[in-house]
Length: 610
Image (cartoon, rainbow, N blue to C red; front, side, top):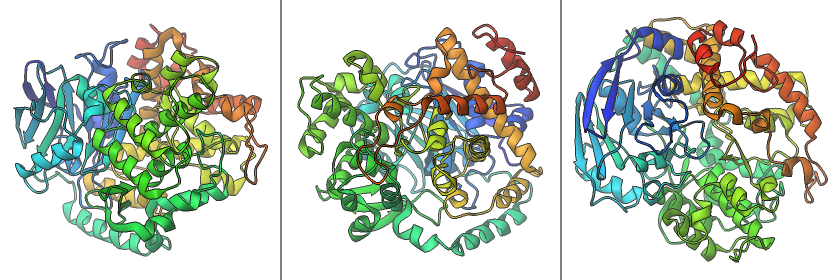
């Protein structure tokens, strides 16, 4: 087998045992890697109804056939589990030396089950696995943890850890590496905490097996050179994703005051040009020449790595227009190991609840000191933090009073940073994302606004599906960063060449789409198995705020989504995917994708059409 190592590392924390297991080549051919491996592993090994915080749940760190190779932006891994936030499939990707080292240690995935009796750190060095006492690390931030572990490890060791949010099982805790490389929005950090797993240190020294190493060396270098020729490269290096602040402000889709508005009167205070004046350096993932992490000094004089999503969710969405203060909140999120997107959402929800008198706590929009205190309370589950640590879906259930209509989530995952009052296609992208409301699978909002934001057309649905197959399927399975393709326009043909040089196999676009469709359909099947009779198409519909409450500010004042037209779009989407009117894949669809066994299992939990 070339392109893959052919081995998974299986770790049992309960008994502190680790075994290396070969896997069937057909799994690699059918699911490729990364998200594909994770979905297959979780489907095959978890019983329906597994408690996400139980020892029986698994945490999977998975790579793909392009991970770790010296080609553009290949330092990514997927971290996945059954999500404690959503109850469905959960994952995220992270750019970290951990990705490179997993591969160089001789593995395509690390599968962690069980629960350690006391806090533990896993140290993997090639084919050895050691369990280290982590009692002295428990309670430390992710930054402190990595700093101390780095002193005892090789310079390029991969280190991932959790902070207090993960330890205390905050349902949107992430896993953090390199002081800002976070992954696993749907609570992967909390799953680590539930297993008493503080960190992993991964060191590998073995070559990654390639079918055509000399060809790969040449085309990898050529790919880096090609990126330098792209028209937007220089501006990207200046602002990265931060340029999106102004674009969203201009197009009335900037999340503002808990997604109530699409413009923010202090947007200039948090935009890319303000950031440029403050920037002291760039950070990026391994093997990246378009580093997107913009490092600034925050209001406390500490380094904070900024990007668009984190800045606006901890800025305009909570009424804060001071970028140094936003940077402080962002750094706190990384230290505690919070997902900054969900954190900004639960804070915005709390502020609106306070404004409406639904909670006794007084938290005003943009109140920096109150926000800092609230972040501490969420991480340690104190006061109002006990409720907010459960995520906005659960918080709304507890508070009631109609708050579920402005609890900004889909399937339990807080919506990432695009207000869709006037973007039905992007709203559908959120509604049908594999993990809940996340932009990663299909960021189509810029295309949508260029081609007709008011449209609910079949063409828009078809473009969405095409994008999901590439971004949410292929790139998550490769497993490499999508930014060269998505943000700078590195053509998809490059990745066909990379796959051939890595694996020796030719992947046409049709074949690649079939693999992607198989992965995304299996993930959908996982959700339906876990939800059982609670599954409904309503789970694919965004919050009612976007349908019932028109924008009251900006050049699109009065705009809102049309629920009937959205439902029609959803019907078209289901039909195009081969799913029934409830969003359940048909037996014929699963059979076509080679998922016959999965179809037989799903029949036990859902009514399926032929």
